[in-house]
Image (tube, rainbow, N blue to C red; front, top):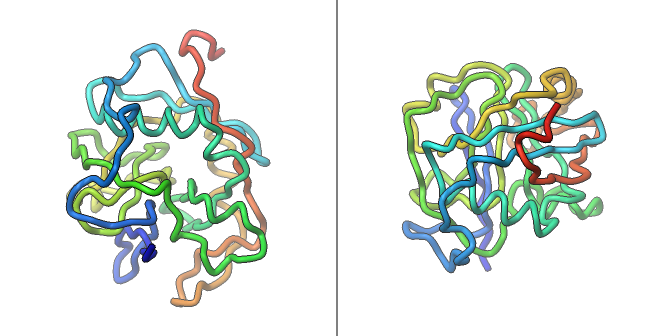
Length: 210
């Protein structure tokens, strides 16, 4: 399978995103990715830097939310890492390739083996907004996601599916966002020099969040 990096623009740069396979139509998306979003659940992202809690938007992106929940419940994200961090912009994770500590060159190119439909909506990119990365082509997201460190109105004009908002753990987001980085092969200052790992992502009842 040919691999692709997933990108979000940052001025003249691009920001990697998510899937492993790029196409103009969704590819082999599982049936579990199609139900409407559950209005009573949240995601607890447990990391080596602490926990973050994401509330899902119930009026937008039901297929994206269902896909994220499916992957989380299957343990897909366990042991992955935030492989791309740009201070003041976003932190990016969800790539299964980051589980392999011996092959950092492959980080940013992994996916679940299928792509999902874009669900562009009216929710803006604010600090703490979670959204799906993609290759820059239609319907090319799959598993990689990013969380904004500041409002990004530029991204609101582009084809990225936002699907939730951080409601707890802003201090953890800040800590990960301040991880020291070095230049990538493309010269972008975004490669963490310290591993910020996702221990697990648990889907829990929203009313269990204190």
